[in-house]
Amino acid sequence: MAEAVGAVLRWSEQAAPTHPLVAVTQAANTRSRGLLERLGLLATEHFVEYGQDQVLYTTASSG
Image 1 (cartoon, helix red, strand yellow):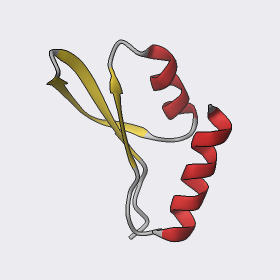
Image 2: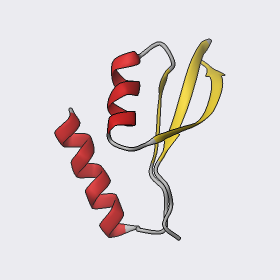
Image 3: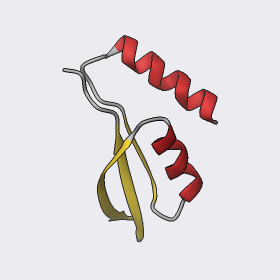
């Protein structure tokens, strides 16, 4: 999974360098959260959707 997400991040940086990439996962999904954090995404928002706590991650925009 790390390779696939890493490839998307690299593609995004080349295709749209001034636009952040976002990802959402359930707060309880510690494996996904850990992967996103290891790849450099930042938790920027917490909210409830579908009755579950969610976390929104984003890359830093260079624009």
